[in-house]
Image (cartoon, rainbow, N blue to C red; front, side):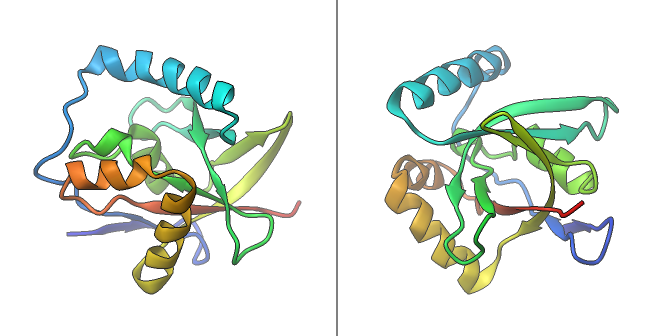
Length: 160
């Protein structure tokens, strides 16, 4: 079963089902992993943005560094992948984004922008998946580890 949360009709974020198998990331490793990911991607020159969401359970803001790709079909938009290292479940930021889509911001190069988040599906998702994997082959490995379809989200700055 898929849940769709919409704050406005133009902001669909689809919370797709978790998988039944995937990589096993112990909880303490997740926090350490974010620090290591941040450092590793910065040293390798991979593009990072900071995504800020509103916690669906905590009611607090949460920020996480994420690798992104520029969207070749929507100039000015970013693509992020909810891979969570190929685990069977979605990362918390993705669940937060789906449940509170009106409270999402991106910080990049010292500038912060409110964004609209859209789940990609079908042929569009396939096209963008291939685009992303060409830049970061590790995502193909993550997909092999899990049976869930790893979500791709387009983040588009909102004017105003």
